[in-house]
Image 1 (cartoon, helix red, strand yellow):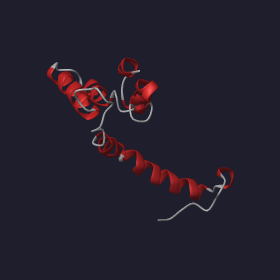
Image 2 (cartoon, rainbow, N blue to C red):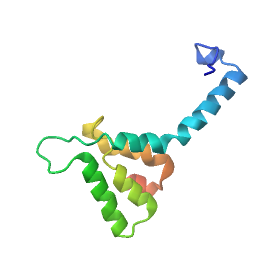
Image 3 (cartoon, rainbow, N blue to C red):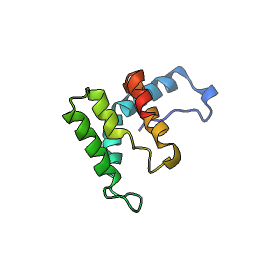
Image 4 (tube, helix red, strand yellow):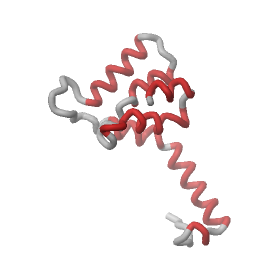
Length: 112
């Protein structure tokens, strides 16, 4: 894979930044796949709960779907606890930050 020539951002050339833009575009397009892969790892949970984080997330999304919620709310329900493993005390802000570029302000606020 081709790499940039610089070690400090200030030394980057137009070609370097065009290369990074190309790689970043591909990386961004793969975001849904990375999120779903991460979600599949949420099979463990804190002690004491009846269901895993994955099961809870799927239950939440299923309930939103059955309630005929809009697609972005179903996705928000699925991902609302995505930050539990990495940011337990502020997992809702974590999930809201992940969703922010893709959802309405209202949905972002609900998750946050």
